[in-house]
Length: 113
Length: 116
Image 1 (cartoon, each protein chain N blue to C red):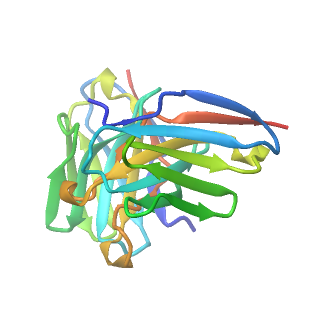
Image 2: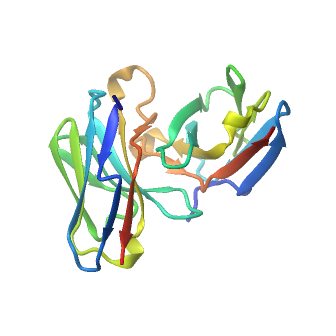
């Protein structure tokens, strides 16, 4: 049973425009959310996180928004750059679950020059 | 030098063979994890270890075993490999003492395993 879902397997965006990657979760106990970025032949790299006590966290071009009532989060990348082309994984955890991460299936972002 | 290393990076083996994948880290983290990734799927947790004496099963531990030889080393074994264990395997570490949530995990580059 997939507790974290990324319903868009792929997304294409023009360079300079905004990329919006979405993630939904079902477990109301999740209280910490992370985004990872993965290039081919590499391991996932931590990108940005957000605690459930916040609804927004920003780091440079990357902003994560959390809507707890909708059990939804999104990652915004502005402006998108060709180097952002990668697979993005959403992950969630809860303190009651030993802080283990549950991952979505990933969204492949392609930024077109 | 990479903080989390995995060996081998690629391995092809035959059904029934015993395989060991190794993970080493220089981050000084207590917690280590093994995941597998199948095409089109997210990462699934196989085993995790909070310290040398603490080993726990994850979502998909059947057919796998682990050994935490030291704080810095965590090995994953497939006792008798089967074709549906063909996947990408990732090791990760995290640090509960970092002051933040221990959930932030740092991954190795992965091992691509093919079982024929």
